[in-house]
Image 1 (cartoon, rainbow, N blue to C red):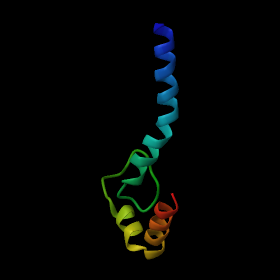
Image 2: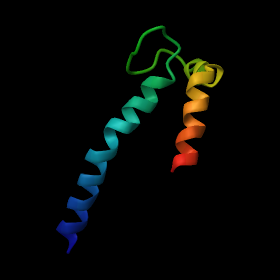
Image 3: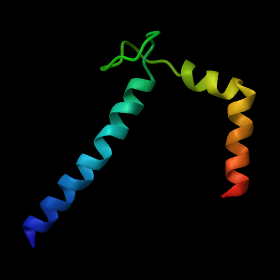
Length: 65
């Protein structure tokens, strides 16, 4: 039973690792994608929120879902 638990954690870790890397790279202060991040900035998220097309598409997707 112990080996099944270890295997399960390895599968979850392998599945979630790319998401963690993308999230860490998305908060970089640089003008290009870099890992590890060269400082901390939320400007890319602010840029998405300032783009009306993205916001409208997001809310349309929520309504459809």
